[in-house]
Image 1 (cartoon, rainbow, N blue to C red):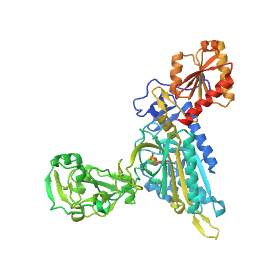
Image 2 (spheres, rainbow, N blue to C red):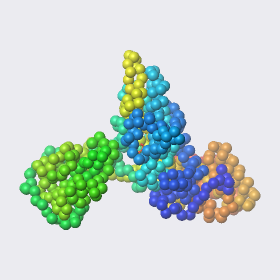
Image 3 (tube, protein in one colour):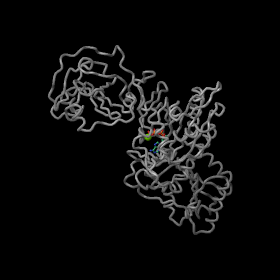
Image 4 (tube, rainbow, N blue to C red):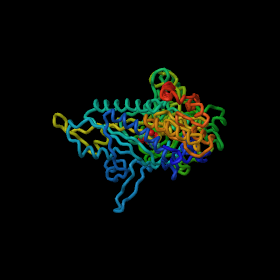
Length: 577
Ligand code: ATP
Ligand code: MG
């Protein structure tokens, strides 16, 4: 491709709304442009990056025995009503009506559509197992679209669906996808890990997420260096207090204490000269529209995902100040479990460790001392309801865990029969009996992968693409476009590289060398070749490894060998990095 006729609108400054480095660089490098919140156009360079990622994904999916399809983006509501998700999916599902007033949605995921195909076509055990995948645009009306391609509303996903006769087969399919994902993310040059995950609104029995480690990641990963346990914090299991760690001493009588305008745990702790860990936080929420009080220790955080699962709920929202007043009788900050008129009070296991607590009094400006949750409150159920923190004991081996940030780039689920039962996707087994097909589903955020890749590979000058993802592996800079000899040589090298199957962008613009150097660093091709009048006179091309910054001169007389050696050396450097 020739830069002079290519469309790469680079920018010196990133727009103010771009917070993370991948978003800034995708815009500055002219790879994407924002149309509206969470919706982006892919410009030529961005599209090339996407296609590079997609090509690797496609190769590995095909290698794993999956067949590519392309399913409709617009889906009828009836299918979603059949699976039960029309009610439950929430506002992320973009719903609309067609001209005949029929409800439709834009697919955020495709379990329903693919199961509909399978129930129509698969009759016998002989047709199984099967795995269908696609690479396609999804729409999710995210509440907080942000970070550019990282969390868009419209984004590109690879989604695959496996269909098996039995659990054993389904586990094999799951393993095959898991292994394919490892190959994909390794080939893409990403530093990643796989973690145990929550199955979210897709449902199902177990799942793993693939996380790219990055400071800007929205997910928190708990990992244990002593054993190999790793889990999303949404899922990381906490061990309940051991019997020998429980202090069963019953406290004295409950006492009311005056805590004027002390609403937060920290304020109350400071005011009463106690620790946040001496306080029980009472959090009032609605799960599927029923009020619930969730109790956690003052220094702990409630885990919304765990609470939702614990109650078999779909949607959790916090009570607003009016609702808090209605439920507890007091303004925010003074709710407590004693005589609370909420039917469902659930308590985190950590609160079993002792008896005497400080809690809200359900009266303005008052708290209670010496509260025993066993004696003074009506706890419906105890459970694991909070977030694990760095340094807490690993649920497998007890060693202190680490917490790191990550970007979820892929997710594999074992679904079981959730969709096949709802949509009646059955097959006839060897003995002539009807059985539901066992399913799995497997997603990769193709557009998010491109962003994650930039997040992990950049410096102050711009992007540093790993060779497999780079829109162009080589950028060839012609510093003297007006000089015929230089231009002829640049064209010759360009043709040479193209013939070798190397993607090359020739900067043949009438621009100052400084502009070309800056743009080359910004666009992030892993290899740069620079040809100018002076170099040509000396018979050399300057070659720069974008990642290490190392420059060498390649002799035009021994071009074949010198280029091949340097090219191999740069690739080798990436492999070992
Ligand atoms: P998240 O927790 O980040 O919202 P999810 O659990 O909803 O992700 P899945 O339904 O498993 O995601 O979708 C499969 C993959 O699609 C994810 O692993 C992620 O890489 C990608 N993805 C999901 N939502 C978005 C989005 N809003 N923008 C870009 N990529 C996304
Ligand atoms: Mg999501």
